Image (cartoon, rainbow, N blue to C red; front, top):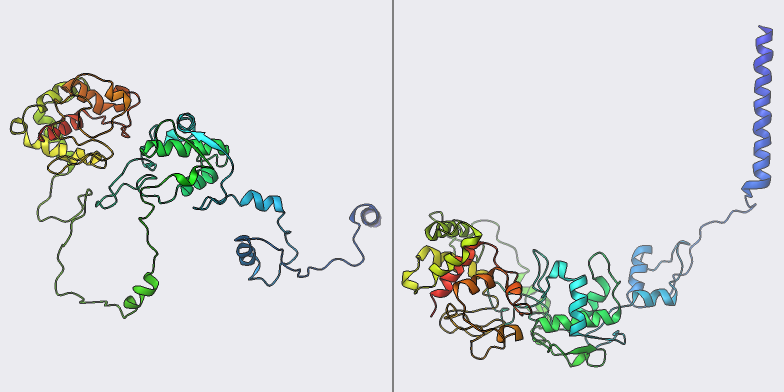
Length: 393
């Protein structure tokens, strides 16, 4: 028993001695604790410019001072953040870029989302087209049709594009891309060069399309009443119909666009891609010889085209030419429409073969065409829209 106590007692004393030496060593050589440790005190807020003041106050408690965190922003840091461009040109850097250079830069950095001709890919936004559609039920809002200031395009591209690699473009590249977008909207010619010197000379079509929002003064007071919560109307009726989506309730179930197209495909016996031309050929005769179901299906498919083209009585040239009588007509023959040099240089007419090839792949059929549409990939869609166009002489 005494031997065990001696053994454990010696071990405990040795452990205490080692810990004491370690603390003394750390105190003298590592820790270096001050006799009077600093306390956290409030200091005056840093002096910032512009919108940075609001952000600083919001993060520190409405201007009551910070708590020793952070430091005033350096002038060069503020300059790096302050990259916005105003409608009057304030903030524009010195630089320039041509439409020709912009086409290459756009193709390398932007086309994967916005299309080679700024027509948009999938759900990514269209940047060109939509001229004259703002009053439509389904307007096409692009840089050319909707944006009132060119500075908005330059500023956004400079700060935020390309997607995932923001602010990697040079100033000249941004000028070139904006020039190409203007060209894609038919606002400048193909030899145009955009620079900080002529930037304000570019007139945007919708520059006067916006008004000051005075609803807070003119309308809001009329809405500040007790809302009706029950039995607010004697009867509820459908007074307007939703466009494109086919969501308005019907007494009888209506056929969907897909069902109409499928029925048209059976009627026209177009089942495979190689038979597109044959299907279009069947659609070329006069309207009374065309299957009504095929024409109805084509009208729905034409919804993809009507942002740029018009048909029927009173049709006018817009971004694209009117399409009355297009089936069988000479290529690039609509009076008063400015075609691309590619189409102007083509001979021949819109036959079954040529029309099918163009509708399937416009840029492949006519390299350099300004038509901002990727094409119809379905043989049934091509046959249907051709039948619909053939009904307009």
